Image (cartoon, rainbow, N blue to C red; front, side, top):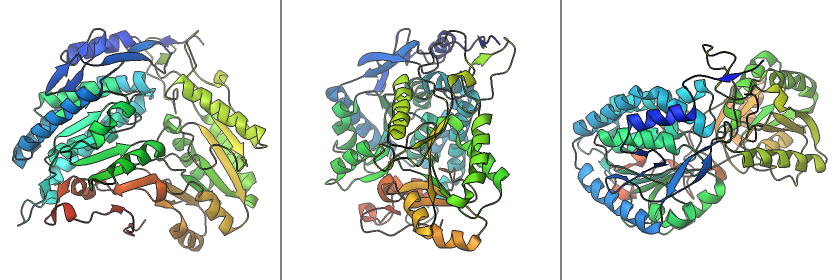
Length: 520
């Protein structure tokens, strides 16, 4: 069947809509940086391509350290005024920003499709989770700040600096920024280098129009990190990314005693032991492939009791055979709805090639190539570039020397480990030295209760997956997957405000010497 691009969804159509919606932030040939209170054509736009078909799109306009320093200084000055703004006024402006973002919901979602390859349903969900989550905080902020009490919480002494990953620009980054602003802090944000910068540019244009003190800049992390992490006057650092960059950020903060919450990668795992409800597990496994497992709470490792392997394999391969992937905007005819896909491309062609190399490396080390799909199973436009697409693949018993034995692939490449004892199950599930989530599939409630406390995961699901969560749900990590304060619900507000104890307040989190971990 010959497919066509859904009319009205091309990149040129999408970018033209951006120019019309926020001409202050988008030029015909480049993006601008929101620095020093306005949009400026500073920084050198780099070359970039969309993962959908490899075609060029404007890249992030990267500034240097001097411009970054000036931007942060301006944000610090803005923070002084914003932190004194009454809560009712802050709430009104954040609410106006949410309304403006809601009015551009479909354009924000379409930018996520083109920039980071999200299928349409998942792109819309990313925008909606941001807006719905912030609306919850708008209703709860009086209680969270304790405004009716004698010692209400107060803003930090400086703005919050945000360095986030590319995969959830709205539901993670913009959501967090709007809560930080509502709590009385100015915001500095860096656009991710790999994607999401067009969506963030539009979002921040609308936020700035609502009178919010936001700064949005682009740059190479190794060139401007000092301005975003160590600049005198910053109040906190919010970081989402890999462990290597997280370690560097944590090391840089070591002597500053500065508020921080650093979400890092973890090897999340499903354990399968004495289990029989395979249809329910199949539904969980399929949902787990959404967005090609490019999220911090994806499950790429399965640790399976050996005698359960035949039933698990039948279930798992059935799921792989049912997955739909391909170009998110390819339709059989012009008036057809956008396709219902589990995933589109990975973030770029280099990532797809890396995943292929990891698969080949494991097989060379005598892993069993359990499944390796082909792009012939996907849906694509005739002749399009498919360099950023990869079919789902799975390995059985990868070698201990494998590059991904202790880290996440961040793509649809799974590994399965067979075990015979509880001790082996725990060792296999804890291979990543700390993770954000883990799950156990078992019919034995006593077994689950015994094993769960020994899993090095912040959230543990019994016969269900766990996720980052929304609204009041706490989020964090154990071991190397997280550093600093836990967030979510009241804790996110606490992380970006001072209580009566001021900077000496002990926050709930993953700090050296603390054992403040929640019930799971």
